[in-house]
Length: 320
Figure 1: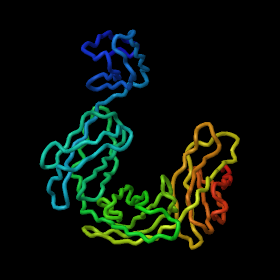
Figure 2: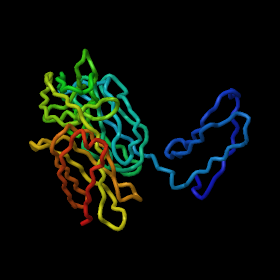
Figure 3: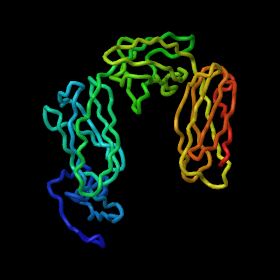
Figure 4: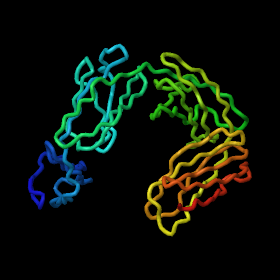
């Protein structure tokens, strides 16, 4: 292939004149072009697809291995995907009943493999570096027996009914809940210490929060949570630099007892000096702590209640 420029003319026939199509252009084998035209109209004028040579990505690396349980038996029902520089988000499955897998080609770089199975804890392999043309064997990826969490709820007056938006976070992974008879039941979780995160969003007015929980392999952990009415407060953080700061910061919110009720990463927009996020918190005293990737830190305390709903809480974090 000549990277200096090429042209290929083609004609597509047999299309329904009443339908609208999209066109995806891809160079097969080891090169892939990310080019797509939406709303391709049959009978319309010729469509010219211009491809930037910088979008050509060499795909010459393959990954192999085997997904097994703690007893060495293959897990053919598992699903896995690549995580890292060559990741494209595609979910893959083993090729045989013994759990063996071999991927199609990926770009060179550093990648891990994330494995999900309905009967096992989530798994993320250590990262491996792959040079162009390499075949990287990850060996046996051993899945542990997962534990589950079942949550029941008590509500303070005014809190929305139903199961709120929530997930389990910990061990480098996130596990979702499903609703069953008014309870929230998690998928398989990795054994160890985790947090149940409740989101204060959507149609629910429930206050968001983080609740520690220990998960044990092969067991169901039963938890009862009290849901409080939350009040929305926009949080506005500015940094004191004269120009935009690359990267982002970690935001932590603590209640008056020192318990953490929110933890998340905020990424600065490339042309902005401000980041906003809406939090839904129960009435009380809170401490907000922001720490940038560069190590700058700022803290602010505030008392929140129904009378402050909708009012922005602002603080500034100085560049180091």
